Figure 1: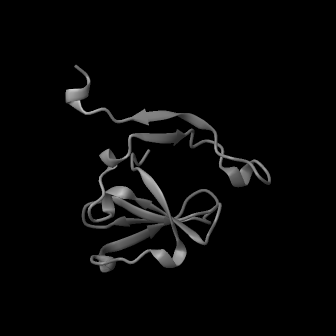
Figure 2: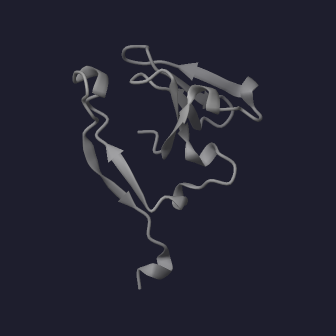
Length: 107
């Protein structure tokens, strides 16, 4: 429901350049994953993954010089069944793919 394009980063590969004092943490369901958001504007910034705690999922819009429109295709998972709930080796179910097409490409 957060509507962010999340990219993966290794745990040691993320640096908060500014605003760290405004970040708040929340956890839901199993309370395993740590989700962070800005307490001022409410934007989701990143989360420490439940499926791999040595990784962060990072909102691409929070990376300087990166835009969600930089990605031609974005896979969207159904968000219902988490791989950790489905057994070893399970992958999230793909609900669809978001495609970015510039207005001048539509004709």
